[in-house]
Image (cartoon, rainbow over all chains, first blue to last red; front, side, top):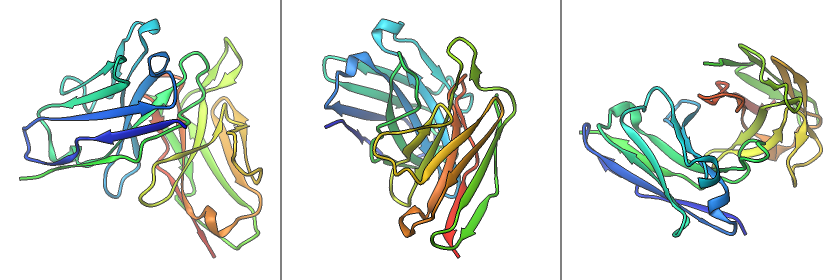
Length: 122
Length: 113
């Protein structure tokens, strides 16, 4: 069974850092890209960024709102992707989700984690 | 950025009736190399992650009831729920994954009339 589990959320002060993880199971993690999304309270879904698989260069792309502050990485040996968030702002408060991207047949995002809540507040 | 605009913002439909949601992209999301529209529809219920319903504008994801259908190409797309059920109450989003940044519509809230 395909599973994605996010962890690492919590309450953090503005300007501080936090690292989220996305642990995968039930599929060959290294073959897939991983995207991060977020949903802020009362707002819609927002794409945060993604990391391609090693076969696709392990390249990353980010939304303008987080570029330069957030970094996505992956450890295929552990089937984990990370979202390192720095210089956090109150507007980064959201539930963060990870999802897998089938890079060779792009069809949207078929499996998602349950999400982890990040609250940025003093 | 490709701007995705959904209409309406909210929709109240009687049980068993049809619900129609529209999505318009600011530019084409048709991949000419494979003739596929890189447009997906998701359903999100409170406290749950999004669920993929439709991809390539009109291909139903495995396990999704056939009352859900998608249509359109280029810049104009539609999600139709042919006979609304109580469990379909949710917010629905369209998403383009043709180019980065990948973008979503603002969401359409569907409720029972």
